Length: 338
Image (cartoon, rainbow, N blue to C red; front, side, top):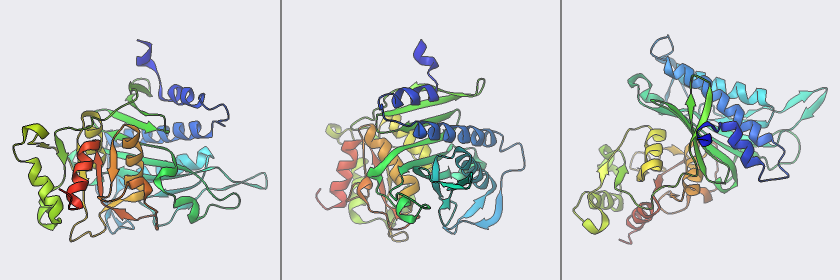
């Protein structure tokens, strides 16, 4: 019974106690992100009631229309991170350059130990249709020792993440996070304003019978991927085929469902997007860290996502992520070994 009343912050502190030399900064930072996401959740839940829907009339760095709720989520997270004092810089999918947060206090420059990447509102094109959307975040220790944050601090491989997570705004608001000690999920109880533990040490199935992909782009894929998708639809009892297709079109929603029930999410490169479309730093790296902690796998079709050396803040990548055996199988097809 007591486990039903474990709050997010209590759980974070319990994790912190495993490291006697911990300063508490990362714990406080995770709590600040949770607070910002509570505020975003409030706006998402009443988005249909107030004048917050629709386009701002501007585009982000990717040439995509920016919606009002995107801007609100971005501003809320940046404001919370500035107030926390635990970050020297943040990078947002909605901002072309990273935002330096080093402070001047009492005439002395204070340099914090962490940097954070976030996708403020993933799946925002689905806002007006009332489909689940979410926030994705990723935290690294800075690598430079003094002065203001530099691009070197922001462009680190996914293996160097110290924490990552996402918040999904759906029929309930759920926060899932990892600090490299398993994957844990919490549901927001709006009556008390607290995230309460609902999933302890989540593990994804090794193989499942669900795949998530936009099959409308079938004619744009390479032949290996087409053969893989075709194989999932054929009768093959020993492999559990045929599989069921489940595709929301909101990365956080598709990933969350597969994390809970097993399955594979695929967002490949194609003739139009030769480098893929998802962002390495804001989407692929944090979700890859989470799925690996849950016993799954994430790849770009050839290489482990967490091993990719980032070159730019908004670098794109193909993504195949989910149950380990399913991801291994699609890799074989992608590399002509099946």
